[in-house]
Image 1 (cartoon, rainbow, N blue to C red):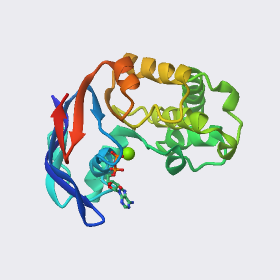
Image 2 (tube, rainbow, N blue to C red; image 1 turned 180 degrees about the vertical axis):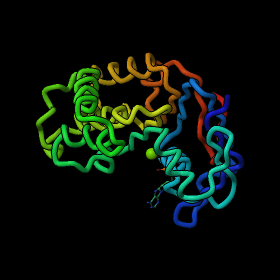
Image 3 (cartoon, helix red, strand yellow; image 1 turned 120 degrees about the horizontal axis):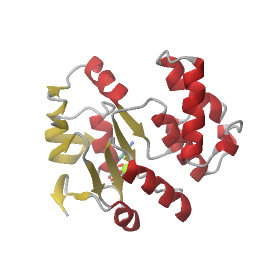
Length: 215
Ligand SMILES: Nc1ncnc2c1ncn2[C@@H]1O[C@H](COP(=O)(O)OP(=O)(O)O)[C@@H](O)[C@H]1O
Ligand SMILES: [Mg+2]
């Protein structure tokens, strides 16, 4: 089953055409890498899929349904967890604990289950010690791990991570790669980090000149 698809996607940023007829199909359970140099349009592609950037032309399908309205994209955003390239754009709560509790509480999950989710995700990324810290005081790498943990508390069906290895030291890059390799979720990772690509070893597309090339 195809979970996510873009057809003939054209997207401009500040009057410059960045995506030029981009086609992508991601099957349920599939894991793919979108490799591309800085400025290739990786973030633009992800933001279009998530409904934050409006394409000039082309269509986006989620579980066979073309996404047209803001309501359609809201539905997609409940099923796909999006880890932003810059964690500062994603995190907004005062403390790590509040940030991790935000999604479950909004989804109406019980406080016992929320506590369980917080403990699980902190443990997964070995950041239990950050639980009561101010987000503001965390390092870039710590913010990255918190931002991935946060997205997981929503229990999304799929994950999109935009340059997840950025800001992380080698040990945490391996930890994140291990988690991504083990999860049963559908995953899209964008990166320009060839070492990270090797750790994942997934099907890789190169984003160049506004379209994807199998690499
Ligand atoms: N907010 C913005 N203002 C101006 N130009 C932008 C903005 N966001 C992206 N761009 C430009 O769009 C192009 C694609 O950017 P982006 O999608 O961020 O690439 P990547 O994520 O692959 O590094 C780049 O040339 C970048 O400079
Ligand atoms: Mg980017």
